[in-house]
Structure formats: structure tokens, C-alpha cells
Length: 239
Length: 197
Image 1 (cartoon, one colour):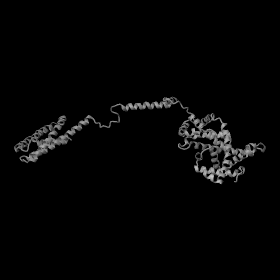
Image 2 (spheres, chains in turn brown, red):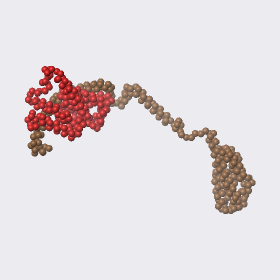
Image 3 (cartoon, helix red, strand yellow):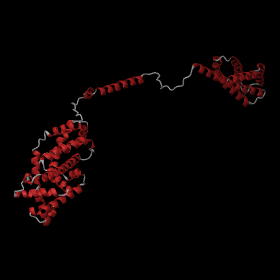
Image 4 (cartoon, one colour):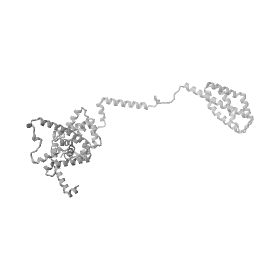
């Protein structure tokens, strides 16, 4: 722009005119300067602040000196607020200690609760069912012995031994239940069966047919299968 | 012309938000701090429009009272000075209009010999003040937006970006209005300045 004004006399003349024109603003600026100088600027803010607070009725806040405990003075000035804050603090502390204390809490433990009587009945029921199941499986093994007596097939003999061992291990668990609930009849028959299974579990493939015949005779003599049926029916009726 | 503590103001914007918040909470000291920072700027704005010391002081008080009531309306990030000067401008223009109406009523109802005609046209007798008087009248006759831009630019000595903030116009519009104002003044004052219209 300066370059253009240097080269263009018309624009230069116009710029000079504008400059002359704007010089007239100096007078106004002088007037304003005089007006500014005549005002007491130190006093004016207080005057305006007084008017503002008086007009709105808003209580003015005096800022306290910045101290770490300055917030306490605010509480002292407002008893209701201080009381509320104290209540909140005490309540929070009480809640903290209440929840921190170990032991059962109301509503917290969601475990299942049942009476001792109910649990005894449930365990008796379980014992009956276990016994019934044991007798049923034992009956199958004994029937198998009857059907295979005289047969020397190796396969069935090994299977019988396996089943007998399995039932022997179950009998150990069953003993505690039979004694606890005084199931005398069932215990007696189960004990006799256990003796047979002890022998069966020791039967090897080379066991002579005479040995099997002896076991079969024992079952017949004691009417074990019949007794098993009777005990089973009795247990089934109690379930 | 005056000491508006420009450097202080330029360093203040970050704190303006905090001061205004404290004002909303009824903090008198924060309110007085804002007044101390901007009172002269506001006064110059008011005086430029009203051309009367007392009226300008009234406008200053009114501006800060309105600021006290509306401190919560300030949007952080905007120019606080622009917002404040806009309030000052609006209050001053309102005041000017009211006084103008009163003056007209007063003049028309008073007997002719009671009207201080000499006081109305200050220093209108001397040749040196003829141009000043003509200049002042010509500024008065400018379209309002042109007049405001001219006054802010040359009496308040604001930058165009500050004018644009105070008037809520673009910088380009502010410059354009200023150019038109200068051209109009040039035309009107051509005879007094001895230049071709």
C-alpha cells in the first residue's frame, strides 16, 4: 500500500485528506482524556459495588485468608450445615465399622439353611436309596454267578470279579450309613453278600468250576436272592 | 490518552472466568477488581457516545451493575472486554436516546430566551473550533453502525477485532463500516477542509 501511495499521486492526495480529517479526532480524544482525568477512579469501584449489593440484596461474601483450616470457619458460621456435615461423618464412620466387622451379616449370607431333623431325614433317604441300588446290582452279579456256574469262559469271570470289587468298595461307604440309621436287616444281607464278593473278587480265570458251584450252593442255602428281594421291597416301600 | 492497563487486561482473560464466578457468589472484592480493570475503557466508550462526563459516569455504573446481574451469562472463551463494551455501548446509546428526547422536550417547552444556545454549540464562535464542531456534528450524523465503528476505532482506540467483538460483527464488516464512515465524513467536511468532495 505504501509503495502504491508513493507511485499514485491521486491516492496519496486522498490519503493525506483522510489523515487531515482524522486529525480532527485528536480534539475529541483530548476532550475524552480530560474527562478521564477528572474522575476519581479509586473511589468509583466501591461506589458501584455498594450500589450493586444494595440493589440486589445479595449478601456479599468476605473472602477469608487462605488457611488450611479456613473451611472450618464456614462451618462455624453455618450451624445447620456444620451439624449436617457432622452427622454425615458420624454416619459414614458407623457404617464403615459395621460393615468392616467380620461375622455373619444380615442379608449378606445367601447360603442354604435347613433344620437338623430335615438333614437327618434326607440322609436316611439317601442311605435307603444307596442300599437299594447296592442290593440291585449285587443281585445281578449273583444271578450272573448262577447262570454261568460250570461255564469256564474267561470273559465273564473277569467281569464278575471287576463288578465284585466295585461293589466291595461301595459297601465300605454303605457301612457307615447302615450303622447310623440302624438298618439291621439290610446290613445283615449286605454283609453276607460282601463275603461272597470277597471270594468272587479273588476268583481268577483258572478258578475251578467246583469253587463256583460252592458259592452257588451258599447263595441257595442262605436264600440270598430271596432275602435280597424282600429287603428291596421293604426299602422301596419306605422311600 | 488514558491508562487502560492494557497489559494487565491482556494478561487477565484466564482469570476473568474465576472472577466472574466469584462475583456470582457475592464476592465484593472480585467485583471491584473487574471494575478497576475495565472502568476506564467503559467510561471512554460511554463518553464517546454521550459526550457528557456525568452521563458517561452513570453509564459506567449502569454497565457494571448489569455485569453484576448477568455475570453468569458470560461464555468462557469469548472476549470479555468485547462483551462488556457491547453492554456499555448499548447502555450508552439508550441513555443518549433518552437524553436526546428530554433535550428536545426541554427545548420545545422552554421559552426561547431561557435556552442556553451558546452552550449547545461549544466554542462555535472561533474559526479554529468551527472545523471541530463541524467534525463532531458530522460524526453524529453518520449512520449508527458507521458512527459506532468510527468512535470505537478513533476515540476508544480499539483494534478492529475488538470492535468486531463488541459489535458482534465480522472484522471485515467493521473495516468496511469504518471505510464508509471515513468517506462520508470526508464528503461532509470537504468544504471545511478545503478539499474536493
